Image (tube, rainbow, N blue to C red; front, side, top):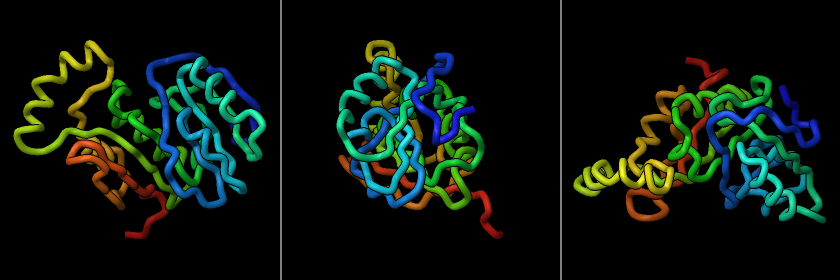
Length: 190
């Protein structure tokens, strides 16, 4: 297991990439973020930048060269995060769960590493409703074969299936690019 105070750690490469979202206001605490977030170095926040790709982490490390802040880099799999339970205040990801083979498993892992009341913040493209959603369903096999990501994931449903409480669902572009904020259900009183 990796702790937030560990230096760069390379773990066995498995099946998914954790990437992330830079336009999130991070309060003091410990955040698990991915390679796109490293441009945002926040004083008082310990950021663990995680990706399945050592190459992406190397690029991310170069972006933070000379930056003041507390950023560490870890190669790990979104479906099997190499962290102890309840160590992060926030997990931030961008366009990750379209590529993870089992997005519910990946989201459960995010929930597992969150402290009680912690948040998952996602920027994701999702399956839109109506006729456009049906078109995305038709195109998905071709698009995922050519480009990798699935274009018709039902991310809001997957967030709920993973045991997270949906807090915010904000449209960024049309009905298919959204910011999703969910909270860990751990420690909640019924």
